[in-house]
Length: 577
Image (cartoon, rainbow, N blue to C red):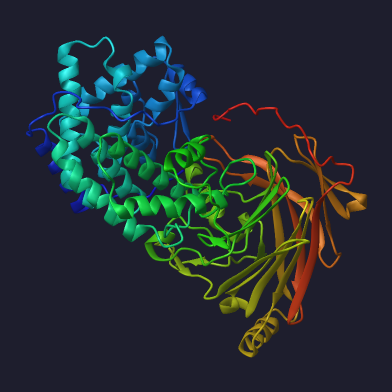
């Protein structure tokens, strides 16, 4: 996922560089007091790519066989940030053969030599915290076979980074970057000789950040599920490390873990992946399960809305809907105009998705991915339900729906959600109302999407728009983006779409005939790939010519689809396509 970063330019960057160099004058650490149990998870496939000389970071693939990671041409600042965060150590450790271990040791000790005295782009609080965690986690691998001089240099560099963090963590942006910085400081204080004095203050600061950033429902301002998982993971790591050292985490720290866990359970689909909303992805495989295990407590799932998302789940099917206002202010820098968008997963197979974040594919894809049309919901042609500043200078939303409401209900027949927003009232006088009903067996999802002028003032605005377009109507579409693994085709003379999943399930989409239905190209945007994956989308197109228009549709398993399918095939982990 893409993370907001503390600034490295201007006064902030100058202060980072100053304190990075001053840290070289501090008294260094000389060894480990103890080591927290390693909990980071790496990708075996990415580790293999690295050992082969293929460097895939921030959506760029650089082939540089035989070259050091620090000598690879840098195509983008985000590429440079990722290599200096050293998360790739997790991937090499996942391989753990001779070549992988050799590269891990060589690259880290090259970093010590080149940048360890405070130079280079890696000296920001969040990158330093991330790097320290990996260096400590993989210390046995890194120090194996090293002589005394190399070991001394390693600990000296860790000590300098710890001192830097103790002085600069407050300069990290609130949210995930600051949690990374403080977790790194806790790890270093618990592990390194002479650094114990930083533990109490860092632990207390973590507690304060939890109280400030984690709301009463276990959510964060960005409403990004994957970012919430990253924060949750850091909090569980730091809490476990403190407990293993005989220390008690701050009460707000533990309380935040208790609040977040049920929310994350509500935001995961039947296949274990997170819902892809507000710039977030599915999350690293295994990370959510690991974090939930280490969080302790009862396995509760949030009811009602979880961080503004509604969940309908029954049988093998989960439906997750964005049912709250988008983030605002600085929290909306990477936010998406996804109000009332939905995702549906059947068993291990995603069916209806959102396109996802295009940030790793450049500014044009980033902007396109944020638009309402890139989500499985209703959009007026040429407009999004939330809109960026008119001058385009900022990436924050300047215009979001004033009212977003949702009413989830359940009874003996199934689970129902009625939700709406007025995001198109300023532009067209129109509101969107979405009704969903998931049957108790999870085999049928029924939906109604209404676009209408609800209040007297809204109707006046709509009449003005109608006069402007010479009463041709307001064009809009309801889109259902499909996962790339779904094999979709028009069926029944174009009145339905059949969708075959790799599990063998067949789903059929039908509509009430009010709109025109087409099957059109779409894209699936995933971090870690070189280009967007082609896929398809079901599009229902119509015009509002009166004060309201309602479209009805159903998405159901074919009658001959078994209730239980043995879906044990494991997809290949290919990240560079």
